[in-house]
Length: 135
Image (cartoon, rainbow, N blue to C red; front, side, top):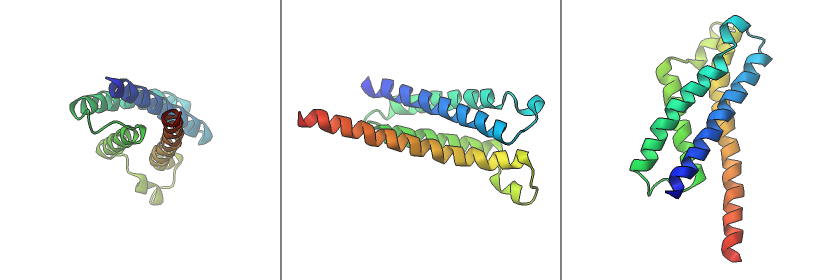
């Protein structure tokens, strides 16, 4: 039961990080508000579907998803898979250099940034657990 709540917390944090970083990139690229103002909300809905699928996966394979890093990698694999399925092609920017196509590259970059943040959280979490075991 502990890993289900841990995975839910990790999925929610990663979803919010994806939405917030996407919103920052949309503002940074100065994309038109009529087309891209709700893009971060779309990403949040997109990540909630991934969270549901990830939770079902964690419940089914409960013994395999016991660490923060494994759960974060599961989320990122599902996220990248959904990006590929949705048709977000990052390489189209090289043939058509527009801000909209640059956003597609940043969607993949954000994914790796969020995974790096979760890796740092994993390192912090493992140090806290090791300190508890030593005492």
